[in-house]
Amino acid sequence: MLSFEEFLNLEQPYGLNKLEKNKLLTQRLLDLTRLHKDNCLEYARMLESVNFDFNKVNSYKDLPFLPVRLFKELNLKSVADENIFKTMTSSGTTGQAVSKIFLDKLTASNQQKALVKIVSSFTGSGRMPMIIIDCPSVIKNRLMFSARGAGILGFAIFGAKSIYALDDEMNLNLEAIREFLDKFRDKKILLFGFTFMIWQHFYKALKNNNLKLDLSNGILIHGGGWKKLLNEAVSPEEFNKRLEDVCGIKSVHNYYGMVEQTGSVYMECECGHLHASNFSDIIIRRAFDFKECAIGEKGIIQVLSSIPESYPGHSLLTEDEGILLGEDDCPCGRMGKYFKVLGRMQKAEIRGCSDTYAASFK
Image (cartoon, rainbow, N blue to C red; front, side, top):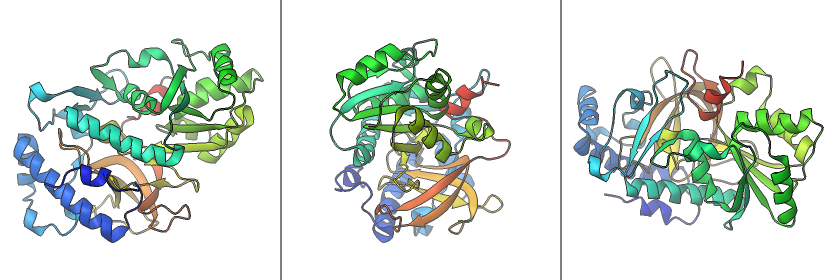
């Protein structure tokens, strides 16, 4: 079996071109498909129901995918219960089913290693003083992480010293932030948060009180849904501009990711494009026949990850729509596919950390 170490040992996380990536990712994803077939009865039955034949796979594009919603309905795992190290859950509104993702120590470790490789290629290898734009109580349960808590803990590894910008009532702790910025005034500052919370509790708190902070030397990484912001007519470009107005921050990177494939985040480059790293890929599929879309054609996003060994989450069909913008030719210089997320499919449940939280703001 091709190990995940083969991917980690690659010098650049965005260095594989189309042919190189197809060869390496196809072998790894085929091996993962066999692994999960042999160790997850429900997954084996699903492969059998579609008459899946390993001998007919020429590329990872030929592999079957699971609807991401299945993780809300079934406990899908490929390891014995005693080897489960951590259970992660998606965010959900009251009464809504949540996804449960079962991790062993190896998969959890590989998720973190992949995240470090990807993010450090944007932020640099050194750890930075960090401001988490959220409240401390979100990470209380260390055994069962919500997507929001997992996101915070995952990105917290990039912080040498960190503070929470909000208290548990979601009020901006301005005094603590100013003290932190004064202490590290000559350092590059990393900020992390979920999109709607940054807008609602950080930007609006500063704007409505005519306050400004100096974060001109900061890097902001944010993720989560845009549904509520789009309803307020706030585009990604407007989001970035408004934040710069109140705190001078210029380096802002959105990311696309989900609890079902933690570690395989798709970071936004300097050109405003989301990128697939060596560790993952996306395929845009047509809704009516699931055939692969052409560049520039809207379809459903399929996400593939070389990481999951403890659960069959390596090939998933999301409930998001997107457009493939190109491959191996982004002006930023990174190899691989780059794309745009258009939002949730019509009638799909609200499921992202930021969208779920935003649903409480009517």
